[in-house]
Length: 228
Ligand code: TYD
Image (cartoon, rainbow, N blue to C red):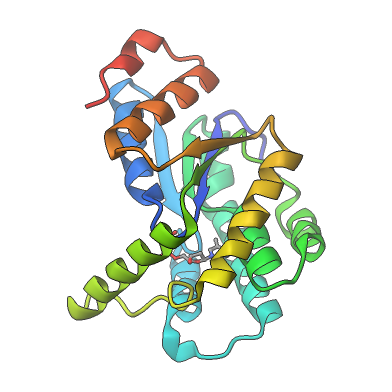
């Protein structure tokens, strides 16, 4: 495994919690500050990963065995690590990744009831156990997140820009299990996982994220104050 010089920061949370927008805003702010950033996402992040992503998110895939689903998430991740994440870290880049193994633990482990053990074991074998330096868990209300994700899904279908997302059509009980699993990860690894209340305005959330990340990266706080 390549040696790490850059910082690895992941974003986690339920569908519709505003994570992707916040990640892009943070990337913009860091770049303004002169930090070299690679911003990426899972499943996906590579050409192979994007094909796997299509298969995983397309509702036409239909009934996928949870273990097959987990294996596909890790296939995408292994490729993503070797092609994008590890080389970027070795080059000293700050890598911002929208979802990582915590998503597998929350969605397949919790949501699909496979439990944490197979996820952590696959992570050890296929990803060399790499841990993010910081994970921002955007904690949001289950019902509100599901509603927002559904609205987003409908808008995407009507604009024909993407197919419906298999996960976003899950019910509230599923997302409650995902939420619980996320909070358990945060409890187990408080030094890595920062639980951020994402129910405020996007600007408040952005300011909080800047604060946490700038502290972690030891960047000057004065530069963090302008959150535009
Ligand atoms: P996406 O449209 O990227 O959702 P979001 O913007 O909320 O991240 O879809 C990714 C979906 O894949 C999301 O519903 C969570 C799910 N997922 C897993 O179930 N396991 C995983 O390991 C990963 C990375 C994602």
